[in-house]
Image (cartoon, rainbow over the protein chains, first blue to last red):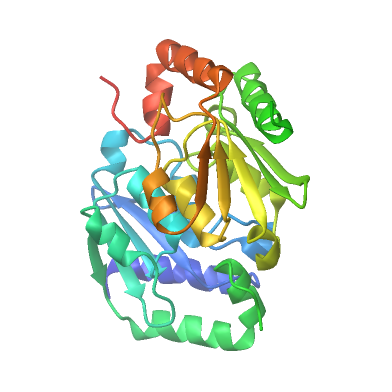
Length: 148
Length: 148
């Protein structure tokens, strides 16, 4: 497997081990990870720290030229907020673990010229399917949906 | 002036007094402010805490039904990231101080059914114009642009 997707999955597993939602992300520049993150809704009571947002936050304040030459890896198709952050900073390429358990704003990203690569990785999908089955309430909260 | 826009401007001024970028926001539910925030790029070295994001974070984890019945006020037209957060949580209406110094993703919001009201408030615009003239480097960084 791709080293960087492996790192994103490791972040997702770290989140799961902390009792959180298992979604992880890394931002890569020049072959090096400059930011890693995982969803921290549960751990920090956060409404904005999705995996990708946490990776941006941990990458810290970077020059525009760095973002524009970076790739973001995420275990799950990115929601509107995370896609918006990708557009804000002009990240030119995203590698997505899977989009079968949740389809994010891939069409919006493509329409703005972002290269979107979806791996349909079985491990990423299993992580989400198991989590959603066990904690539908948390999952719905994370994507702004009401629980049944 | 609208009480809630006044509160958003007060947040922007608080940010300016802290040496930060003067953009503020409040989220209102049922006539009550449930989250306030201002841009914290400088203060916290944050790449994601725009004014609106900070308001979401300070509102904390809310039920989907609350977001879907809230209004967000912001002193400046929202960038792609903040607009994405608004779409994620299904906020139905945004009140914007001004969009003359920066035009954000208003068209995207409208295309998804969000009611967008722009006040073109002189105080909001003056805050931004003065800041951009004094700190173009910080401003460009905040919107993902390279400085000249």
